[in-house]
Each structure stands twice: as C-alpha cells, then as structure tokens.
Length: 200
Image (cartoon, rainbow, N blue to C red):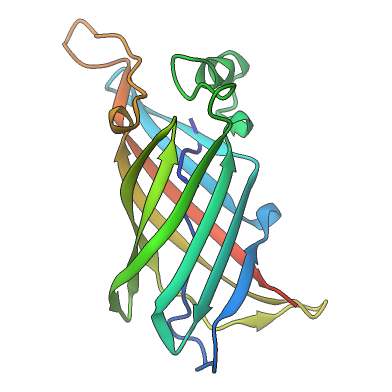
C-alpha cells in the first residue's frame, strides 16, 4: 500500500522555519498535483506494501516569526486509496479495513506545535479515521523560505512522518501466519510530501 493517513492525512505541511520574518500568519493550500500522502505496512512479516491517497485537501496557516502558532487542517478521501492493485484497493475500501461507504473521509486537525529546532518541529493533532479520533504527532522537516514560481504563485513545502497502530482506529482485520506473525502488520508508517501555495 502506498498511502494512509492520515491523514493520515492525510498529515502534513507546516510552519516557516528558515523563512523571512512575517508580520502575520499566511494561509497556504496544498498543491495536490505536486504532493503525496503515502504509507507503507508490513505484509506477511517479510516485505512492505506501499500505498497513497490520491484525493486530499490541506490548509495551513503560519507565520515564520511565530512557528508555534501554526495550524493545519486536512481532509483525505478514503475511496482514493491506491496501492497499484485493484483487488487489494477494493478490499481496503471495504468493511474489513477503511469502510469507505460508512466513513468516506479521514481528517486531521492540529492542536499545537512543539519541539521547534533548526531541523524541524513536531505538530500534535487529532486524526479521525474509521469513526475514531486519536492524537497523532507529526515529525515535520524544516520549512524552506518561500519562492515565487514563473506564474507568480508563492510556494513552500515540507515533508512529515508519523506512525500509527491501525488497531487504535478499529481497523484490525488480518490473518495469522504459521510463524505467529500477521499477514497485514498493525503499524502504519506514514510519509507526507507536501507542496503549498500561498492564498492570493
């Protein structure tokens, strides 16, 4: 599988470490065509399956002079999960896993920013998936200074990582191998590569 959450989100981009000081927080939206919400999970205890979500929205507000005031909200469309395998994707959308018909979106809303250093910071927030909300911490890379593209758009970007236990969200389907391991691992490793455009 190449994508989840959140989420996971889905989840996400933030603050302006290393950017010029600003007088107020600016609003940025994700450029989805140059971003990815990806994940990987152990399969049969011996390999990784990668996935991603193709449809998502991220809104970020930050002031490089006050990184701790950064806020993030993200929404991921569960039905857009893609592991490059049609039958597996259908299974993931079904009741054994995400149950996209009942829970069509995954959301992430930040609550605070902490541990700010020259190398990055942590974003704490609430991830809601499969009808369950849990606190999830994103480790976010330093945000570079903004640039202006040839069409006049002000851009920045970042990467973030986290790990969640899918059982915490009520997603527990698997089967036990002869060695006692699981066909589908419980730990989901999430990587977010996000490019942002400043709202005009």
